[in-house]
Amino acid sequence: MTTPGQLKELYKQGQNISAFLRKEMGVEHNTHEIIETSYDLQTGSYIAAMQDEKMLKHQKEYTQEIAATILSLYEPNSILEAGVGEATTLSGVLQHMQSEIHAYGFDLSWSRVAYAKKWLKSKGFNNTFLCSGDLFNIPFLDNSVDVVYTSHSIEPNGGNEEPILRELYRVARKYLILLEPGYELASDESRQRMDSHGYCKNLKGISDSLGYDVLEHKLFPYTSNPLNPTALTIIRKDNDVESPYSILACPHFKTPLREIGGMLFSPEALVVYPILGGIPCLRIENGIFASKYEEVMKTG
Ligand SMILES: C[S@@+](CC[C@H](N)C(=O)[O-])C[C@H]1O[C@@H](n2cnc3c(N)ncnc32)[C@H](O)[C@@H]1O
Image 1 (cartoon, rainbow, N blue to C red):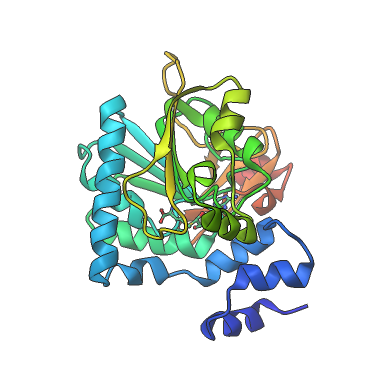
Image 2 (cartoon, protein in one colour; image 1 turned 30 degrees about the vertical axis):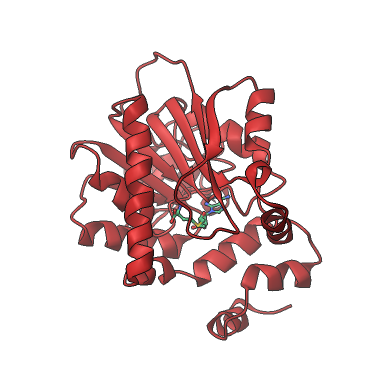
């Protein structure tokens, strides 16, 4: 088994780490470990790409169009990018939103979230909250964010579209917007490529079968790789419940977390979620079972 240290070297040499790991593990679809490892090792590459004029132009057009799409539907008080990566998309979207908006993001990879935080700060966005988290168990309460969107983060989770859609829909209050590979709208060559990478598919079909109100499903006008065309899927959630005051949730039980002793405690799970380098680590596997944590912290 190749160690993460060896994988880091292979990445430097230009290896496609997810393809390498799929082969080594003998699996067709990407596991969490494959996704986390391959994306974490890539950390810094999206921010570095912003130095490239062509990429920067694409980022501007892409994010301006996302913002225009959101604003054409609803004027949100809060948005969440699920699978935020290095926040190069989120920062572009925020540039076209009113400044008081609350913006949230999470990602499987801690390193990417750490870079995203620095990137957002360098762009002057202070009203943002980032944490690590998993699309399968999102660390936010039900109906807690007006508009939830994704930008190519469901992409590597082919085969697990339904549980991810259910989670995104649970957290959204008004709209769920997906910018993901448009498998059904793509050419044969693109589909073959998507299949070989284990990408997601049939997001519209699954949303329909879940009874979601799909307003639109079409190719998005901006795509960085013509072999991976982005499709826009807009799902409306007809919901008038107020968004909760505090929105972070235990990823296991989806119930509110309490900040105790500089950590986040789940009274339901009796688990403490650590905050590492200022980043709350809110994946189920990050939790430390500590049934006496509250008591110990109170008594000192
Ligand atoms: C192609 S990148 C896109 C990043 C960002 N959304 C953007 O537009 O630049 C995909 C991101 O999704 C994240 N991701 C993939 N699967 C995930 C999962 N199950 N839970 C949380 N994040 C995930 C990866 O770690 C990676 O940062």
